[in-house]
Length: 249
Image (cartoon, rainbow, N blue to C red; front, side, top):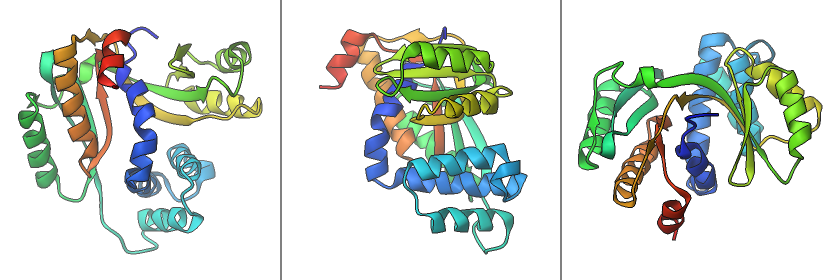
């Protein structure tokens, strides 16, 4: 899909590191609680909760943890009251950045994000300053060793997917939010294992970075990703393969 961010690929490579640090569990638990609070505790009737529970199981989260997170969301167990807030700003080179957070203290979150952006040569902007550059989409990732492209294409496109891309050893299926559940079910019905499935935001256009700017953008993205209130980060940059290879050394 035109304008798909390199950040999605980089995040996939970082997933193992994040899991080792326990960051994945924390974020999934927050997502389960929010989803249960907003749409009820039954995954069968709550698509957002169903997706969060599937992510929890894929990350090998214990069933007891999942159950507790749902009950905290529905109020059956006492827990922290979280609020969802999105922040927008710019990184080095004018890269547009959006940060979805879940927080129990929005003043702390805003202050810390402003500090992280400023420290890494970016600036936190007003609400709406970059949101118009992104589209809400469903993103399903499949390891290319788990299926062949024709089988995946047939299942995904017949179910209403917008596009299927190949990116660094994985297939990326892009859908509209409305078609996300149907496409996911169609892929499951074919017995194709999914590495991840989520609703995300995809940039309509990307900024290609030189090495110096890419290094600065990656420092900012890493800092924001590591912040405990961050759930997801979106950006509209792309890094040429030869520069990416240097950065990964």
